[in-house]
Length: 217
Image (tube, rainbow, N blue to C red; front, side):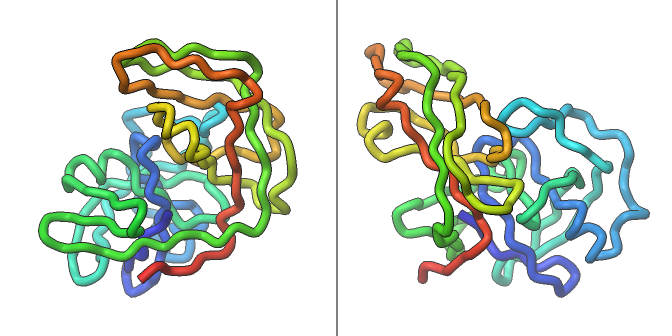
C-alpha cells in the first residue's frame, strides 16, 4: 500500500515497506524536484533489492514533506527505483511510531489517521519455494524461490504473501522484487512457540505490478 505525500508542492506516492531499512526517493522523482545537486554522497549502508542485487544509489538528502496536514523531515536515500516515487522504510515507521491497519487501509501517527492507497491488480506472477521448509519457533529464515509468470512491462513488482500462510502463524513482509529475475529470496518469520512445516507447493505468493492505484476511504 502507498501513502500520498507532498514534497515542494509535488504529489508523491510512497510505498509503505516494512521490509525496507531505509526511506528511499526515486531518482526520477529527485530529478523532477530538482534535488540532484544537494546529495550527501556518503550513504551509511548498502542497499539491495529483495532478490539480493545491489541498488544503484546516487546519495542521501534530508527532505521535508507533508502527509495530510502534518509536516515531517526525513533523510532519504536517492536510488534508481522505477515505477514508484519512493519507499517509506522502517527508519521512518519506527521513529514516528507508525501503526498500520491493513484491513482498513490506514496509517496512524500519534492521534492522526491517514488513508492509504491500495494498488489495483493488473498483472500477477507467482513465487514458488524451491523446497519444503520447516520454520523453527520464534525464528526467521530466508527461503530461495523462483518467479513464474508475467506482470507486464514494469521493472518492479510488489511481493504479497498469501493469507493462508498468515493463518499458519507465519509472517512475510510485503516488499519490492525484480519480476524480470527468475530467482528471488523471501524472508519467513515464525512468531509462534512451535515449528511450522510447509510443503514447497504450498509456498505460493503473488507478485503484482503497482502501476494503477485506487484509494480506500
